[in-house]
Length: 60
Image (cartoon, rainbow, N blue to C red; front, side):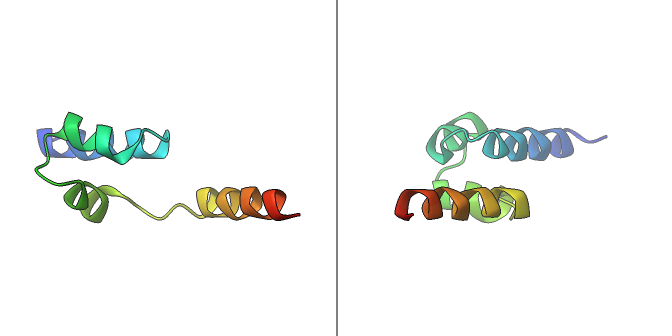
């Protein structure tokens, strides 16, 4: 396993855990949060469903 692979896993897990992107950016030492979100944020179907449910609960 390469160091880059471990870094990718760490950043992905931090984002999946709900750590704010600006903090993940600082931990990963990216110059801009856009880099963090563009490269490392993966669409998670369960997270999308949970977000829509929260919105529905709020509006309902």
